[in-house]
Image (cartoon, rainbow over the protein chains, first blue to last red):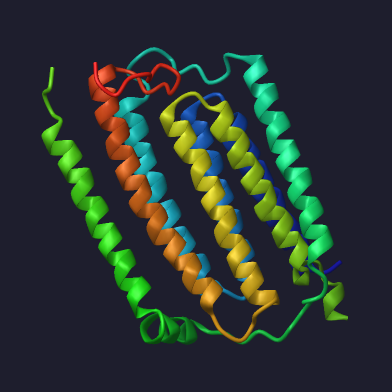
Length: 167
Length: 108
């Protein structure tokens, strides 16, 4: 077992523990910390997949933007009223656990029986290639994503402005 | 020799993304507040992005389309989070709570 494999196992451990913390933490802030740990673990996995640009974008966008947005929302809406009860019903926890395990087993069966091969091929895609294909062949989806982001920003502003004092 | 390494295996990445998907589904069903459900939705989107990059690495290593669509997923997730958090803030202002089970009507 090499050092790379040890680091890989550590990244898997961080990802799994972060995901479990995200689901079963009692407080929303702890769930968000678990989400951030998951994102860092996935960024490490992206580096192992020879995609360092995607790893950097993962940290910048998810940890830098999305997690901060969720922190703002938790601070604006979360702890000022009665404690948000996340753990109230045992039956609900059992039902969600059963559904998640069923989904896991089903997809694991599908994955194990459908894909064979495809191991360790040569992979030489750089960030330059990503930019090339993004601006040569996939220009229209790129512009559509930018339009979507603009529309969502305007929509968020509209929601914040026009629903201020209805009461 | 190199295919004996643990991180050169497609199934590891598929299992990680599958685990993230199932954690997200379980959290979506289990959480009661809207922000908690949104956090679990982010888990599902992370799993989808990891899946796309892993398929691009192992099954289609000629073109970078999987990575490009992972970037698209990140952009769409950012837009979705912005809209969803604005809606959650509006809901909190009007109803004074953000628990999903109590939101039975669109208008009071």
